[in-house]
Image 1 (tube, one colour):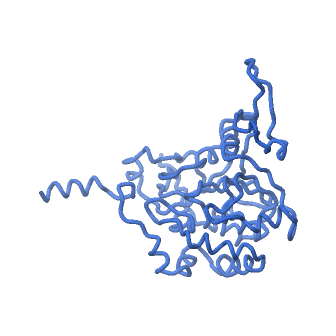
Image 2 (cartoon, rainbow, N blue to C red):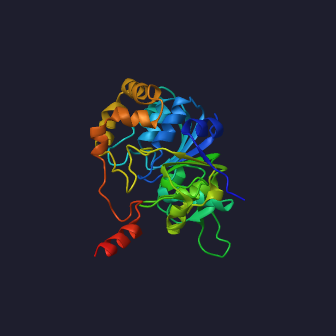
Image 3 (tube, rainbow, N blue to C red):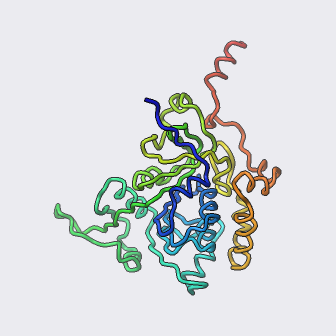
Length: 314
């Protein structure tokens, strides 16, 4: 029996699987951030979402400003190397234009929450909150007695998103997803969720995946839908395909400081752009080509065939 074909388009994936009021995780630890999917959620006008992410990044500023998010569950509230997320700060510090509910954890706390969700555990113990002020700020970080007689230990509750959305280098049509480079909590976040949408740079044949199985972070049984979406992580990066657009991150800081500028950017770059192909066209060939990476052994190329050809030539 043939495996089901899970390939769809991004508009359909979001329309089918993301509904108002859901808890949605968009993961990728600085690398492989699913910006295209976040922009499609904005276009479709989803509301009252609980947005979960380690390092919220610019995507949080954008989705919150667009009115999609009522609660943020996250760690390290910053835009990578570019400074503060000013839309987040306005909501948290002065409820401008409205308040934002926040649950803050450490990076490891978020990983432990996903792990607990994936494993069906009631909580996950960790030592890293000793000496931290976070337990005072977040009542869900609690201490419990060690049943084996050790000192009390902090625990965090499971995180079980309704939908986890990821970006990756490639997948086959059955949904076997391969990624490499910096991998954060993508696997844990996927297994913790009821539904998993993955955007990828390319859809490849099954034999490509089978030829390099160690890259398969998510097997088909864990994936609900796959979308071919080249450039889907910009302005973050996809190792082997394109670099991080550091200029974009620097440009976002003054935009983020001005609420009207944020709304103007969303109108120009999200609402007036129908899909990721149009977004990249608007970005421009010159800027996009400036993010290109040189061939590396980690890229999805057939080095075995090239080696055989070279041997034949010699």
